[in-house]
Length: 313
Image (tube, rainbow, N blue to C red; front, side, top):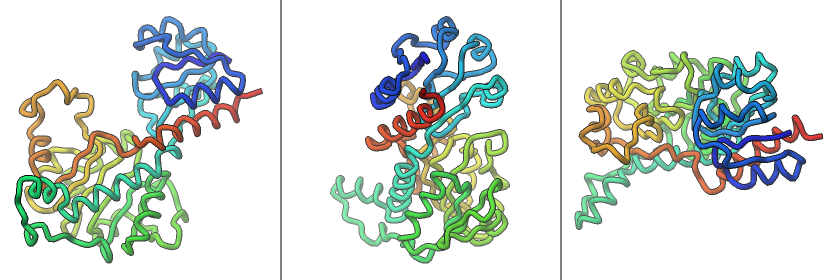
């Protein structure tokens, strides 16, 4: 089987596939148009996020038997259209679930203990102890929305922090381990001090965290989003923070990610983003929660195992 690598990956992926007898071809195309011109030659394709695999692409790929996505999210692949053609779709969320969980915990601890602000102040010669007094996680109630790979792993990390952990997953039941309370959204709205998203981006979850969502909480909350940027309406989050219904945010992902931040002056970005970036109640990172040295290898090796299990002779 011939496999086209449309994106760069850790070397483990092409090496493992080649060892299993696949014909691996890398660096054959730099754009979707170039891939469209040659995809009819291939039985499989490996991609990250370079372009969308849609109906047009699938029509040009009569031999295609599988699509491998290095990562968790599948929003850049029309999975339904692919599967209707008998094309198997693989991803590797197991590969970065630990990385995402550790990153989310790190962001939360940094926020609760004012570490970003305190570090900057000490570097400027300021020694403000009372102003940077932290808030402990022990005894707080956190709600995890989505209890898949990252949500469940995050909960496991949090169990050591002696927190009360609530979980809501619309598509699961009887899933929670003994240190997690399986519940509904209404309970999260009533009881949470912190809420964390671990859901894919779909039509259902797009702007799930909007004005109605923030207004539904009985008390002020801290928001964590390491899932997908467009799950959270940044404008509505800004409004909620101005009204103190959200007291802090940890955001590894932003709805503006299609924008090239490297080539835009900060003033060119939307008002809501400027507000977040200037707030010492917000911790931001550039979509790197699942981007560790270890996850780089695991994302590729997990995907290789799935493809080999399905197709190796």
